[in-house]
Length: 206
Image 1 (tube, helix red, strand yellow):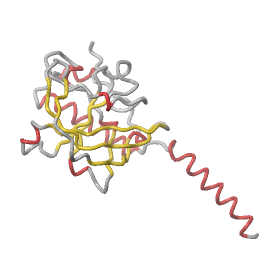
Image 2 (cartoon, one colour):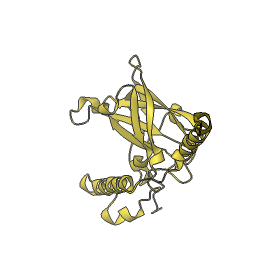
Image 3 (tube, one colour):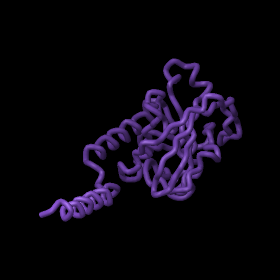
Image 4 (cartoon, one colour):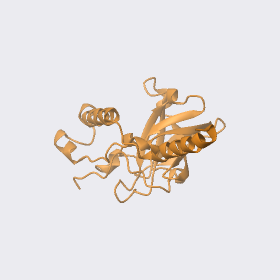
């Protein structure tokens, strides 16, 4: 058989492999890791005297783990940004500075999220390398909390102009459970136009 006859078959096989890549089932090892993460997340409410009691934890709800929402983004540092006041749910303000921007494609659409650094936490040795990603998406106010959700990463997550974020670890602010907290409201630039069907859902007790 001539190589000219083999080539189209090879190309077809590569095409089919690429076509099914996005539909590959999430590995059991990844699901297990997310399950462990959520177990620790629940325990922290009790350990850190959060707004929930042990009997409330059964009302927490999450989307099934889906590794398609673990995304490698392109990162751009924004070193010349000035500090600004991010509005909170109570109407008070907290000071942040924009640290950088991430761009990525999800559900066939190009999206951008800004990363922020708290000017209060940066003064605390334990939290000085924490970065904050508040966001809303097309599920906000429906399947997920209307005030948006949060992601946290550390400075070490920025590698070679890329950042990996995992929406399966998106969590609700304390305001989703009870009143009396000053929860930062995601700035308009962090309102995604797509549905993020990953991470924490609405709190079920209400």
